Length: 369
Image (cartoon, rainbow, N blue to C red; front, side, top):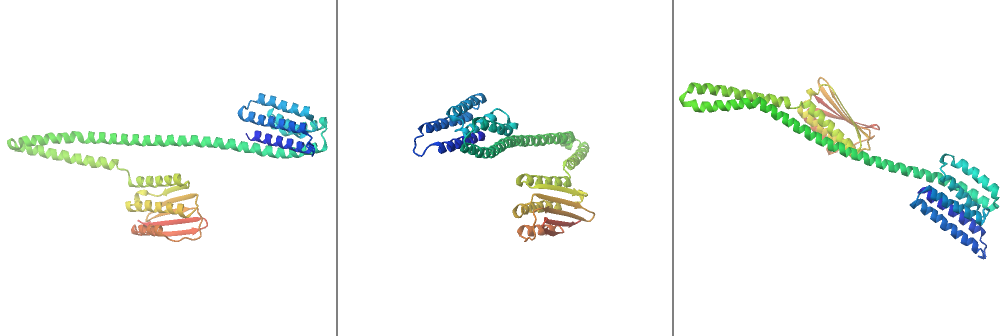
């Protein structure tokens, strides 16, 4: 599209230059005006063919007609127009890698054969320089447009893949949840079903023998009590085994929060935890989650950071957690969010430390175990 517009512009410019120079002031050059209008129609038709019917053979044939028109009307007089047509012919011939080499050779050969007047030669030279510059940028613009379209299509395909992965992840989570529930219910049934059913039968026997055979009824009652006590212990054991460790749940929650933050705001995140996480009590896990939320909110609101880091170090007697971004700041003022963070940290027996410099802003929480 850009090349067609470029060649139409450059040909019309060449035609206007030679026509304006040749038509006399007394307006007697009627034939020259007719030729100029004819060439304008031919050029516009060529442009429309390039837009509506980009068949190379038809365009080459039409271009030959334009060149023959220049030769019949006077190649010396229409030399700039002829030269622009030759450039377009070379471009359509598929010699992309040697366009400028062949064009220079064709220009010198045409000038030697047709010997144009001085004004035509100067006009052709100026248009050639201008045309080479414009063609280069038109070609570059077309390349970037194609690249933009390819990137847009690639982004569209990636978005479709992401949507598919999200749907698959949702289905997988639901499937895992249903499978886990099914497995847990089967485990409860296998462990408790027979014991509770047997206890019910024994209790019914106690009810029947309560008056007629008190000794047997008491014996059955004791057995039923033991069975039920064992069933309750089995329930507790199953629940204890199924319940995830507090440290694993805490780490998972923190990772999920950071991943959601990164996807939402386009800020990279980095998380690490060194030490025995089993030492962290529940109240400190809650404090870390809330402080992490506040630190990420401050990063979005008050900085232009591209990276957010969260580090947890667990030692024998203390826990050190740091929230850092690379936003770069030389000063800060504590607001309600940071004051609330300090209060939560103090309630858990810890302290807050702030570090602010050109590298970014860092919040350090230190808890005593």
